[in-house]
Image 1: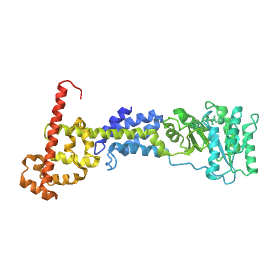
Image 2: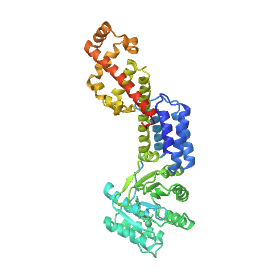
Image 3: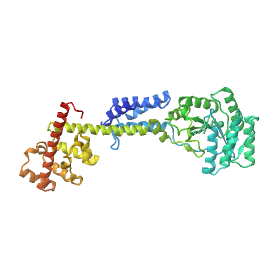
Image 4: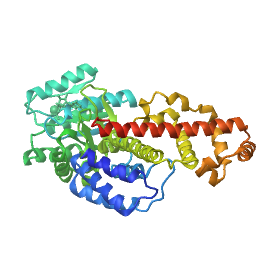
Length: 439
Ligand code: GDP
Ligand code: MG
């Protein structure tokens, strides 16, 4: 896939204007990349449609190549789709604010409850009460109590015999009495969405009337996460999503789909097992990640190098056929200025870096402007046929460029040496090829 995307980008990069066909090819690759990143099929379809509308026929920005520009459109659209930043947590008009944590088993509810409590205390200076409502697994209550100890934070639990809805109700009473301003209810999960679980959660919701219901989703579960999010949202009307385990190597396309399918914001991202590894969710970072922007940008850079190599090849061809003129030279100079040291350009010409005599034609960077001025002072004819240069022409050029005749002579000499050397080199190359050497 990467290779094909690279080819497509390569094609699109050198163009002054992005054609409809270019965008089609590009979006086809982007579409595959998104599907591979676990973005929901329908979401991808809608997205591609919008990208096409925006990208086709765009004027090219100076700072970006058309390929980059299309990528930027894609990234912007992805970011939009995931909404802005939503890391705010509700505040109940009358404390305590109740947050219910729901989700499948192993998604990270208990861990995230601890992280959230930690965040509320550290960042917002709040006093949270953690509530252990997962009574089906003895270890679950212990787990939350251990977290409470680590954080030096109170945990409300009644062991595993009590009814979870009752526990939650009593915890809220406790919070009111002791002036906790947040109650974080850690609930039980199941391996799959099932009716019993949903019934219990629905009942709890009706009883405690939470200000937030955070669905905790494991980002590594891909498309499953989307289905899970859909079910939970239909049943409970969740208020936000926490995406966990984003520290793994998942591309996180699920994030995009969850947002698109439920319309609910992704509020936080779990970035590790430690209790301070909960971050506000950043849609733009996520978009980069989904696109593998690092990869894509590298590809674009690679493609650009390739384009330069192509130009260098053309240059070589011109030199070989001796049709290389001062006009080409000027063009190269412009590139050199853009690209940096002349030597770098030389190394791009196949075989050139192996030439010992390269040093002789080396042009001092600081003299580039002067050289350019000299060439600009030549007539078109002179540039194309330097042979016609005579004393009076040289004098005129020196005057026009604010240089001296000896400087003009030096440039002409260098130019001829360069041509000669290119000829030698290409002959050498031909000779080697003829003898069957690999070059
Ligand atoms: P629960 O069953 O939903 O309560 O899930 P837990 O909170 O017990 O978490 C299940 C496992 O996932 C534990 O081993 C956690 O340490 C781990 N976990 C939770 N969140 C993250 C996260 O953001 N990153 C990583 N790497 N692991 C996490
Ligand atoms: Mg748990």
